[in-house]
Image 1 (spheres, rainbow, N blue to C red):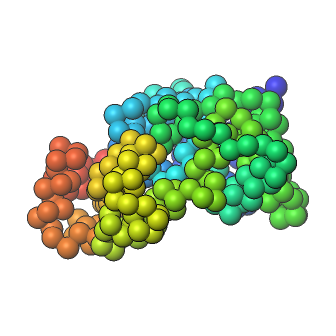
Image 2 (cartoon, rainbow, N blue to C red; image 1 turned 30 degrees about the vertical axis):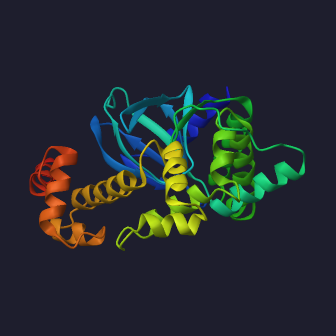
Length: 293
């Protein structure tokens, strides 16, 4: 019943395609009625809950399909390909995007540990993204959070408390151990990823990242690949190119997009872009401009 109520709330508040603010920090509702193939994107730390239809994401060749039976948890910035290939007017996609705040998640993890909840050991499964079943705790917390949107005062007064309740449900749920490792205070790899994501327009030195993490280059490389399925160099390149592709799709010129993600050589950017996506940046721009007409 809770899931049906959540769907009713989401559908009642959206009248067109796109992302819409709820008044609660970091929480947005979205709708899509057109099929979009998987294209380069960057998932910032978030949980995405689908209430109707389905979404897809691809990370390092691994395909994740999530719908109203499983939500997607991505606790660290990740370069992905994402889309809504099955969305249509007859089968619209509705969902909720919940940004994961580093400070609040870490506070909750510390409180859980102080209460006797021990940090889990790595489970060896695929890194970067995890799908989790909608359990009762998640359902109830999400419903209570979204109900606030009907009243501005309730939202202002209770918003952070209800968001904290939802975060707690996520940390206790099927993806909880995965998220707790990423947001744990001592996770140097997560800090490195956050640093890279926030400074894509600056030169990145793997030796510097390793030093920031307090590790040797070899240990940093191994732990980074365990966490992301990519080497540090692959990760930085994917983040830069995906961000550039998103900027170009948003109307930015190729030259501006290249500079915005740290490329000083236009020819190098074009070569690496074409190697990654099979199209030159100019061809990519033309495709999106035609699609927007």
